[in-house]
Length: 282
Image (cartoon, rainbow, N blue to C red; front, side):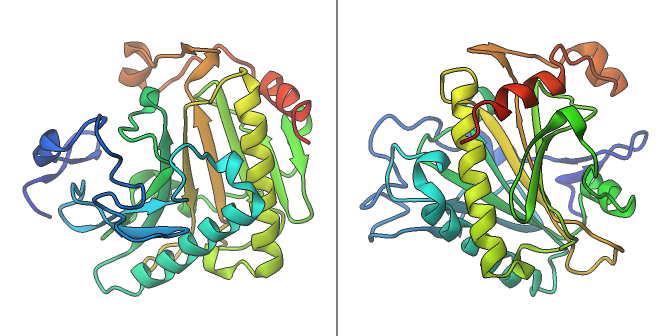
C-alpha cells in the first residue's frame, strides 16, 4: 500500500489521497472532450472506454465509459438497443481487467448530475479496477447477499429474468435494486437473452426515474459482481441506483448525526417511491 492509500487505524476505512485531481478540469465550458472530434474521441464511435487522465487510484485502473457519441442523450433516450451496447462493453471490460494479475475487483459505476459530482454532462460512466475488494463490496459478498424474495409493496416490476424493487433499509430517498431472478455472479455470464432483458429493464427503469419528479434525476448507479481473485460463495450480481432527491430539486443531505454514527434518517418511505415508479413503468 502506497503512502497515498491509507487505512484509518480506528475504523478501518480506506482513504485514497488524490491531490492531483484538484487540477482536473471542472465543468468545461468550451468543447466537450467526449463528443466526436473532442480530446478523448477524435473518431466516430457508438460506445467506447479509455483510461481516465485523472485517475483516482494509485494502485489499479481508472477508465471512462462513453455510452454514446450524442452529447444530449441519457440512458433512457438510448433505448434498449443502445443500452445493450453499454452492457456488452461493461462485460468486456470486466473480463479483460479481471485477467490482470494486479486486479481483484472491478467496479462499474455512474454519477449523473452536478448534485452527485458529475463534472461533464455527456452521458458516461466509469470503471475503477482495484487491487483489493472494497469494504462495502466485501461485506455484501461475504454475507452471501441475495435479492429480496418478497419485496411486497416495494416491488416496482418483474421482467422475464430480472426484478426491480426499492431497498428495505434505504439510506437515500430513491434507492433501487435490479437483480437477476436466478443467481449469476458476473456480467460476462449473462447470455444474449439476459442481456437483452437487462437492457429493456434499465431502459424502463430510467424512463420512469426521469418522470418521477418531472425532471432529469441526479443519480448514482453501480454494479456489484464477483471478484477476480478473492473467493466468495453464492455471489449474486446486482445493480443499485440511488438519488439524493426527495422532491423535484430538493436534495436530502446526510447530516453529522448520520455520518458520525453510520445510522441514517431517511424522510422518504421506500414503499411510496416504489408505488410511484410502478405507476410510471410502461
